[in-house]
Image (cartoon, rainbow, N blue to C red; front, side, top):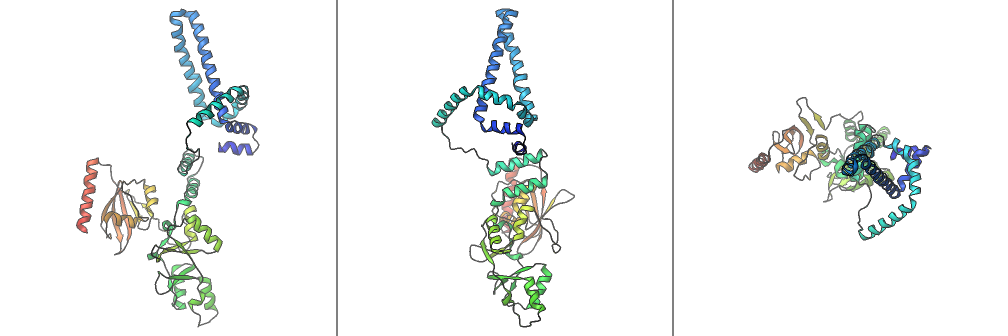
Length: 405
């Protein structure tokens, strides 16, 4: 239908006729059904008369039924429907003029059937809406990719755009423990050194604690002040305002706010008023176009398949992204956003190197961790087990976790 609309906009009259018929769907369907029944009934009646004359009343009707059933199924049902499935646009445009004429011929009957349909609708009303859901739209994109109408990159971009409104700040922020920030009383030479080491063009500035971020300092402002040779310049004089947002703010709304306020960074505040992390314009755009690397970034993939078939997953990788990439389905409801949080939920304690856990059809092992967070895990696919064995394994895991606690 989309291609037909495009062709109609380009001046294709046949495509325009098809679209005009599609807009009169009820009349078109009634016309096709009326014509189909007239042909089938008429052909069956003529065949019965013909075979009765040839074979007599004893065998004629039976032979007529067998022959017409085969003919109707082959040439009236299977063949035309198969051709229409393989060449929908070509078939539709080829038969549009004839169908348009038949719609006009059967206009009075269509009017009567339309009234009957309205009567039935008034008696058996439903509140079902003929709209396309987000899930159906994603499925359509996937089907278009399978048919070769969209490339993988194009389909990923469309899916990201469709799901953009569902992503919240907490899904893409840089967590508090990874935030590089400076205190408001930091000497200027240390600030410039932090800029050089981090490669960032903006740094959050806090007063006493990172839970009290008071603004942002820009690299160009800092170096401009240093070039002037003013030894008395203080960081406080260079601090610019910043935005604050909640962890559940949709990034689509946050993007509009950042654009309207001409800011590139926002501080994500948790439910207690502390700093949950920061989110930048780049973080939001990456949800649409994928990872954006610059010359200062260390390119490390969050999901890496190894030669032995196992997967190395970064602790900060998104649970949803990993589950989608590896097609992981877990019966347990997971609240964690990052893999590190998922491991904590599975173990019910702070993980350490060597800890094992089960996630869907994968066995997991913590391969790198600090005393506070998971840095990397290894996932190994395991063959499906019988239900009884799965329950036994789950019980054993819970028992092991209870003992470790």
